[in-house]
Image 1 (cartoon, rainbow, N blue to C red):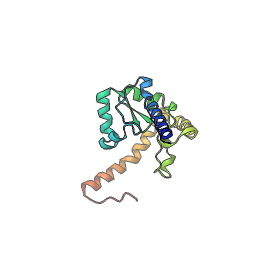
Image 2 (image 1 turned 30 degrees about the vertical axis):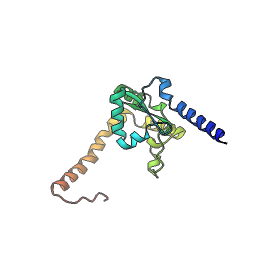
Image 3 (image 1 turned 90 degrees about the vertical axis):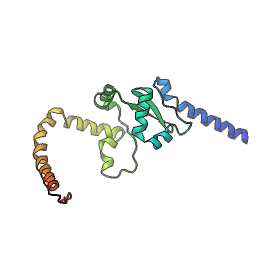
Length: 165
């Protein structure tokens, strides 16, 4: 029985090791990680931003970490970020699951996945073209200017502001 348990344990560790070789197989630098939990300990104790900055300073503009077995990539190269967020955005249809989100936030395009995300993206891409957004700037300004004036007025007179009205 003990030999069988040991064999299963070895299989689990080998699978875990294989999962944690994802970035190495792609030639991407990786922050040191622990078996099974990956970089979760540092990520939680130092915080996402601090840990990310530390990794980027040590390993370069593109560095991989592991949240348990899930590979995560920190990218600080502005050209790569721009390419992913603008040019190749349609090639990244899936995002992190955030189960705590309820309606209506779970319907936002940033939290959708798969085919639903692709359908919404197709609608948004044709609806919000650069020229159409430029035409709307005047409308946005007309709506926002009175709001800003009222906020400034309330601030200068130290009045409480009823935001719900």
